[in-house]
Picture 1 (cartoon, rainbow, N blue to C red):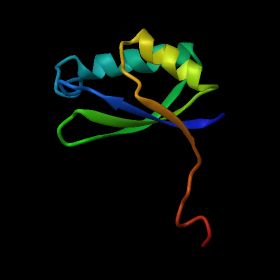
Picture 2: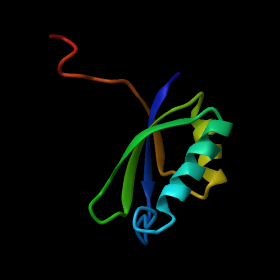
Picture 3: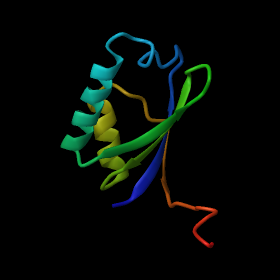
Picture 4: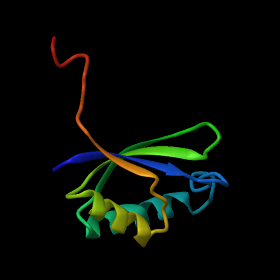
Length: 90
């Protein structure tokens, strides 16, 4: 399964992590992704909460876009990536 880096911008900040419903909202995102064959691996969020970089597995960039639309998440850019691990050569 291809792996992608999905870049997102949240002009007003992500807010999801600060909300009381955060864990329930995150669970909904995971469920919506699964319906489209997308698996959220993890994300990096800037300290101001306005940008995120999500590592996801999925069948295609279009499947990622459809999953994001399902739960109202923006998508600025999708880049197919591969792991470069400094310990792999050891």
